[in-house]
Image (cartoon, rainbow, N blue to C red):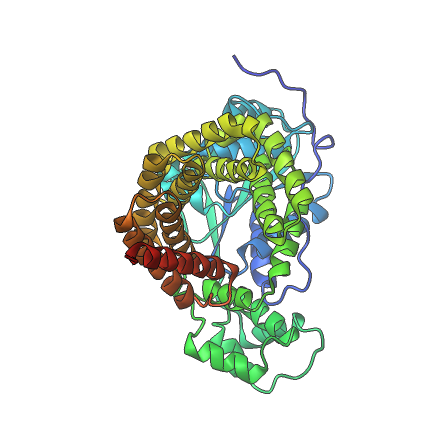
Length: 492
């Protein structure tokens, strides 16, 4: 049965826009193309495509704002970030939330939008930003078919602007592709200068922007690094020459060898620890609980992890309690996002474990078991599966369930080595196994296993540049104690 909907007029539905992007250089031509294509009424879909970090979202935001301003009262523009949505159902759910005056989850969001589109009196443009996931999973045809349906039902009043990395073809829709290319030299220089506190002249600006591949996001990061005096111009150029930020292969998904990830890695390596918390707090302020409950829970858990490391137990408690409250009210949202569900369960299990309250033991056990079940059924060989096994093994060790702990930790180590290689999580897993043999060992043979795992963990921490970290200090402490116990056992 179709849901009954209130009559919708364009005056009742207001535009929903994202924050504007100040100081945009070199994208006015592409923005105008998008606006003109939508205003002509001939294009059902305008695709904004280009490599990672080329400014697709920036162009979409600018075009959305211009459409809303120049056609105020006759066109409504609804900006919807669909990043990480993998199915048509998830995209349709996001659309219903953004176009409803009173957002609520619908059992059948596609049907609701069918009914809603029939009632429109004015033009509506949906901007679906970051649609790669839903288009990359063989759902492109399904999405375009749905777009065609609601456009037809609205009598061509609905149009779409979609950002994605690659062009997608549709046989049923009139589609225009606006492809973003590298910036021109002068525009690229302006991007770097716009991120600097003082507009000092760069002596080697041409060389710098070339090494950044003329890619907007790489240029922004370069400007910020110079502004904060993390690097001098000479130092940054030298660094970039060792790993040039070249993204001309923009038809590929980003890897560690592409410019955006390299530039972000270069930037993050220069951050102080406190800045991670600042970033997460600012992100948290942008996420609406009603519209994006899953993202908010993820951010709360990430922020909780950082505050826990800082020793701020009260704030950690408040963050995790809010995450639990939102999760308990949005089970349906998490059912389709296995990775997010597992991450919450692991984070909350860690929180319960740290409380050391015997009354929480049963719930702690249930949450770790549920997380493992989801991992085995839906995630398979995934780093979060390994992290779940690691946490489950550590908790089992605390309960002195040696067999379960050894099984989970061994499986976790195999996965970490296979998926991550020499990594912090691999080193932590080696330490956890060594701790198991040290505290719950059964004789001299297991002391040898203990020493071997501590040695491997220590070497991996040092390889990762963590020679002065808390993690290696604790490992070395137990390593030394294990050597002393071994020596004692050998005395006549």
